[in-house]
Amino acid sequence: MSKFTPIHDNVLVKKTKMPESESKAVRPNSSEDQLACGIIRAIGDYGKLTSTGLEMPSLVEVGDTIIFNELRGQNVFLGGEELIVIKEDWILLKVE
Image (cartoon, rainbow, N blue to C red):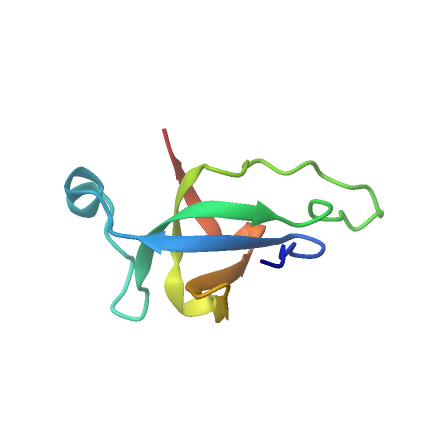
């Protein structure tokens, strides 16, 4: 099986069902937002670049559970799985 690695500040996420406790605690701002829960499968080769060109380290790791706005991501099918590619900036919360 091929290994897929996101580039730059992209993150590859496997969507999961939002745990019952989080689904009651986290609500979208508007009806246009669609929050989703997922597990990070892969992280790009560097974090976000600042306006001065400095690299900011990633704040998440492979295996982290996150909450993100599902409508901003790009669905992809890789290795028989449906995954979502999102920018790290689009991650709203890290579930600990």
